Image 1 (cartoon, rainbow, N blue to C red):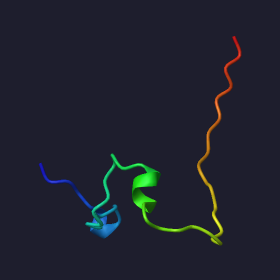
Image 2 (image 1 turned 90 degrees about the vertical axis):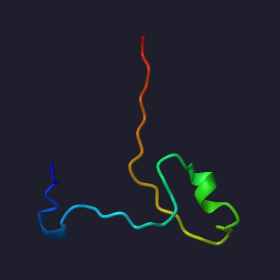
Image 3 (image 1 turned 135 degrees about the vertical axis):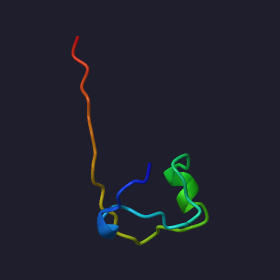
Image 4 (image 1 turned 120 degrees about the vertical axis):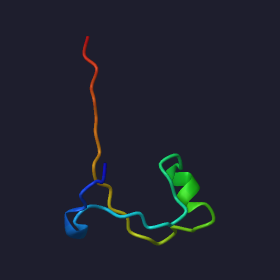
Length: 50
């Protein structure tokens, strides 16, 4: 069955060499973030209250 891509509206692979099994540490290995500004999005905190 062919999947409809809605004229390119869905995501397409970038062929970047990265995959879902890599960690953030894997991705930035050998890259210095010194002096860079970061933005953290999509955080989640679950508080366990028995």
